Image (cartoon, rainbow, N blue to C red; front, side, top):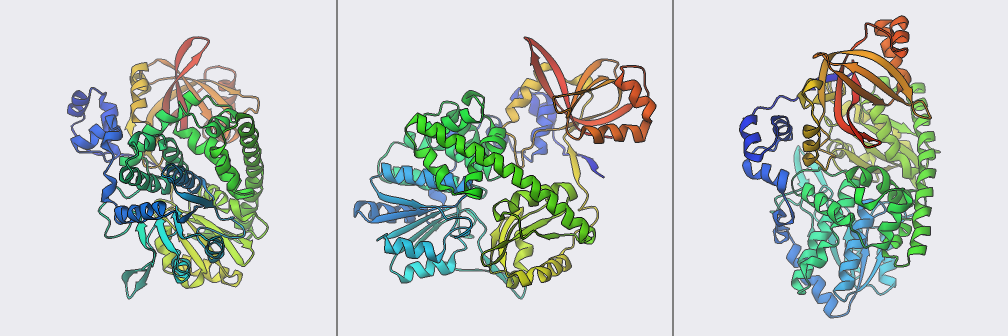
Length: 586
């Protein structure tokens, strides 16, 4: 069951449309994204690199860079310790590229997902010390590594942290007390004392801001920092950060650059995924290219992914990129097996009464726990933790729904974990296997989610008759891109649409093409990608087999639909046609 809601935020859409030369529909969508003030609307529509915030606002930014400059000039050994996902890989690439350009003695280390776990750990610190490293520089991790940083400091090392995760805290008698780190400098916009205006940068964006400060301090042209924006954009989308404010500019600017990328590894990956670099958009970052990078860290080692981006030989890069694509195919197969196992667990353990799902799959590869959690969240619309059997107990990942702040709720039962961290929408955790049942019980006792909050919402931007849609409007909607978290593709709705013919298409028979008649009496074409069998069964339940059979033969029938849609221009053999992509129906 779904709840369809029309977003009904007020503004003078006519005035906005006239001022910015856009349709009132487009103006309404912008308002729906909570972009209200004139300057914010301008930046949303026209923002570019000149509108980025000053990196000097970052707490400890200048301090961290001053330490880096001193270490570079005194020829101290610096080790970058990143993470094994796309954000960690891109952050590591950005920092190593910049430090090498600045003349640093620099090495990198990315934790092994299985043996090291997430982020900085004592083994990595000890290995750096044995290698004669003077300074550890973290990226996309470090804010929660309090004991590990303290250990490094005891060994006499300098520790610099760049991160974007939530600051760890404890609830003491209802008062939030933030934990203190002994790092020499920490750059993370989530710090309470940090004056940086935009808080939702990914790890790679934080690293890039530090690079901007470093290049300024060392009189390196800012244009050289700009070349790294393609990596920032890749990580921002891949780490599912909000595509609002500054992130929106970073992704737009990064997309411009990736379409002309000179990075041999990036070009090879794009080609091996069957794409043209001129056509890359945010969707490809998130769902085509990004998963290949993540598959490296999940099933093998993320070092393979980062080596690809430092590769200068095209033939070698092609082989390396192809290996990542193959790894991602393996990951997809493993994921589907894991999803099937999670559904069996849900049914066999009668989890339907739980508001928060805790699913233990000991045989599943721990690296895909987060993906499985995301799929199960989509199926049942509940917060989900998927746990697997690790070397030292259970490890896993959580994926949440908008109404439930996962990290905050985990903080209320942190005594059950050996390690945890994350965001409101996603988290990672480790705990003793014997604590799993206690975790499931306590996290559900704490949950205050109502039935309404556990009902998936379809938020409609504009109820808009199909007849209103024109080629010009569809082209104009592209100015709202890039689309992603907190700036989803707008959706529209219409009702009382007659079905004239239904055709099953695609070699896997997984597409429906539907000839429609609008309420205004005009013909239109609908297309549906999804559960074709489910769609047809729904129509049979509502209208009967006879009416569906008539529609399948293109004969007169009584079927009428309400639908949530997105309009597209379909080009075939030089002919452009408006096509309505059906996303939800009733």
